[in-house]
Length: 216
Image (spheres, rainbow, N blue to C red):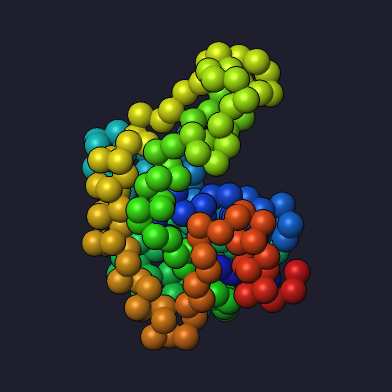
């Protein structure tokens, strides 16, 4: 079993690489948002607690998130776990470490997907998708062959995400650096941190991560 944390700002490609690890290694991606949505409709005691907190508009506590992760560690039969979006703070990192120790599990690597902010903003603000088939394009690196028409299905329903603007991205980046970047020093001090180039081609990033992790 291999357990990893993926660190990196919004748009660094954590979701893409997590999906590849799920497909290639039968790992389970533990995304905080997905777990909360699943718990809210589960009808379990923990789920009812989550639903009550979210319905009030309150923030879900670290204790609840750790409880959801503990349930997943106990119930999922996996080749390992990918922690995506958690921990975000030093307190959460401590809590996760204590949980893994209690479950007699190791944290094999903390993978930082490093990016250049300006290049990341250019990559994301240039991105658009087909609203019909979901094909992804980019103004500079992958434009459509015909302006305004999807290459795959010929639809003219091409869309950009409302939050894929430079202003919105820089706000999200600042939030990441304020709250989450201290984890980089935390895991470096523990000897667990390894960095890869998050802006490299996707296959190159996958290959770099594969060299970090133990053989499947």
